[in-house]
Length: 95
Image 1: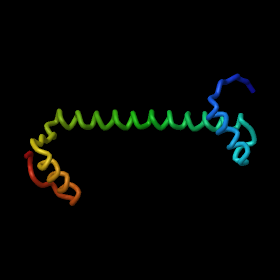
Image 2 (image 1 turned 180 degrees about the horizontal axis):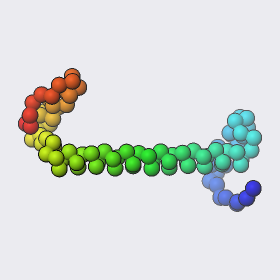
Image 3 (image 1 turned 135 degrees about the horizontal axis):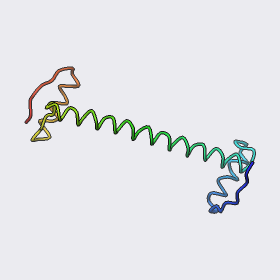
Image 4 (image 1 turned 90 degrees about the vertical axis):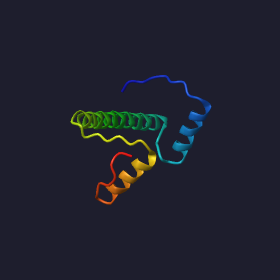
């Protein structure tokens, strides 16, 4: 298994020591490997979120191009429209 020398802050070193002393981890390497797994998971979730946002943007753009977009001149008009959607009906036009 490869080894690396890393520089930690005092706070990071103390955290590792606490986690090892608590019995949650056997040693500092386990702590660091788990931290890297969490970072890897967070990055994968970020990539997935970006993909969902891209898909939503494409759906939105397609709706605009198809003339299905609505324009609201006031926040109140938008709120009335959204309230109607929450009740399963579409009410109020642009306003």
